[in-house]
Length: 254
Image (cartoon, rainbow, N blue to C red; front, side, top):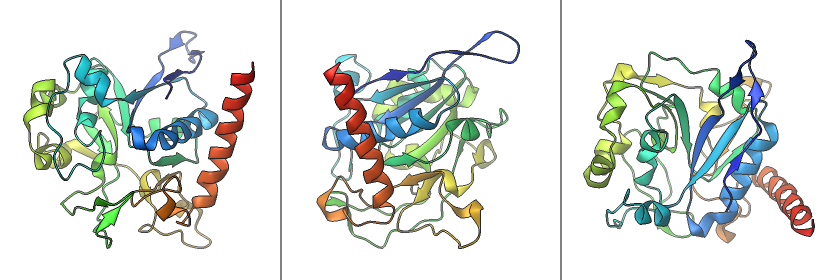
């Protein structure tokens, strides 16, 4: 597991531009998924980014996370994801994303969609999973706004997001957090579905390039799990994994 910061660049006014902060949910069972997700972002990004894994054990050691894991939490970052504004010091915009994403487009395109009038922005899926289990046998739950919280652009300095203190994140219900109940509906901006393209749910329309995923979300389970080796877009993920492993091998040899 690695945290990465690309080199800073110079903006149009000649000043150093601040890296775009990206927080990726980390689970030890999906270490490879995290590394491939990170690799896919860095490889295509034309802007400076900081990528930080959200590691539950580290948050516990820092006294930022202490809630007990519930039976319906399929990953270690089910709730810790909502610490993103706090981890970004409630400044600027930052992104949270699950580790089971593969980015196929430049993150700058996503950042350029940001509108300061919103507290958060996300893909507003209307999604009801057909499967009863996902990943490596975790229970598949159904609830309103499912998957909205799997990739979120947070306006960390927005007054409404100041409520997301460690105390609130550790005690509030899943409904309050995953459905963004600290916000009014008009404070939630919408992002095109191709930035959180749900494998097995969203479809590419032949001849319509606007429907091709910019980020594939293997929400049911990805090729790093034996049961999902043949899922849709598995070939793209496996190709990215091979690139990542070859690069990591070269680094290790040097």
